[in-house]
Amino acid sequence: MNFSYWEHKTWLSAIDFTIVGSGIVGLNCALYLKERFPNSKILILEKGMLPQGASTKNAGFACFGSISEVLSDLGSHTEEEVVSLVKKRLDGINLLRSNLGDTAIGYKNYGGHELFLTANKDLYEHCLDKINDVNSLLKPVFKADAFVATQNKFNFKKIKENYITHIFEGQINTGAMMQSLLAKAHQKGILILNNTNVKAFTTTANSVAVETSNFTLQTKKLIVTTNGFAAELLQEKVKPARAQVLVTAPIPNLHIKGTFHLDEGYYYFRNIDDRVLFGGGRNLDFKAEETTVFGQTKIVQQKLEDILRETILPNTPFKIDKKWSGIMGVGSQKKPIIKEVEPNVYCGVRLGGMGIAIGSLVGKELADLVKW
Figure 1 (cartoon, rainbow, N blue to C red):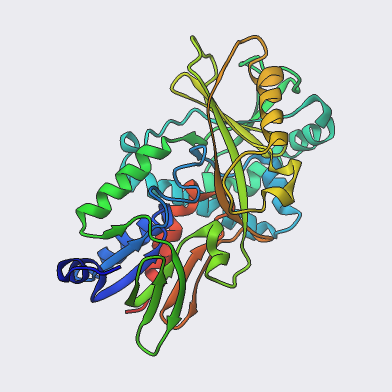
Figure 2 (figure 1 turned 120 degrees about the vertical axis):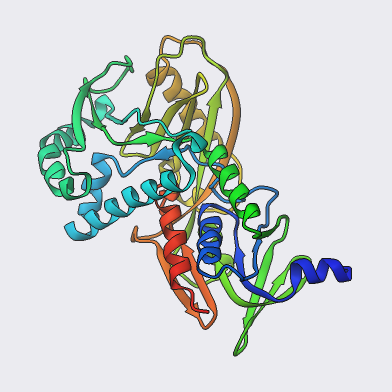
């Protein structure tokens, strides 16, 4: 592609920081870099028309981990690590709310409820038994008991008689959040080029050559924030995880309000605009969902509709309005990877399905790490 003098000078020359990915981490990193270095020139390269991974495709849960997830994490992490993970989620959500404001992101604190299928009797009883222990463990984070058993007030079927509710969990409008972040970035003079796929990079002593699908540019620093797509550019311990999501058409007098976790968090749903948004099911075929290819599978879509019909909306007719998928970045450890990969190249990836909760904080920590 042959650029004009104006195009090259305005967008593609004298770049201080080039960020790959315009999702929640990339935009926050750019904003904090601009705060640290007001006179710097920052360019974000995004391969999609909109942020391509999960930032505009997630369910909009402002969550910290259901009780079964916390107990599961305690099996593979130390207590100190689990407390640190949960604290990072709380700090990240608080940072997101303070940066953009609750109105701009549509934040609602309706509480988050974990449901237990009747077949999961052992897990249900284990979680009930451990409520006091988990509350004690996390009290330094929340300064109060976070989990409480509550009655099945929304009349879901084929579940145990109580939910275990996280009283501090909330929900946001993901599209409004990203629109607010993009507006802030444009206001600060941060440049964003969409439909630009970064294919490779080469480091030199003082700069990085970035090869894209359309051109090659030089930048002083390169920052990769592509999360589930990180393996396309980096050799880090992060794998893609596709999440399939659907939303119903509007349902008159919808009684459901809140965020909900089901079957150890592999399924999740919420209310939004008189609709039910419902996602999950990658546990039905982990290998098939370990992909960067967007789309739906019959096994997952059928299961989502079955649970909607039998458990969530058992006495309510509904129609599916839209279906989509997002790509998360996961690994054997839940701590995000925030590091200098090699001289002048940094990354902030592996958000473990907690992008809303920790994305703002990861972006800030990444910006703080970058040397200039």
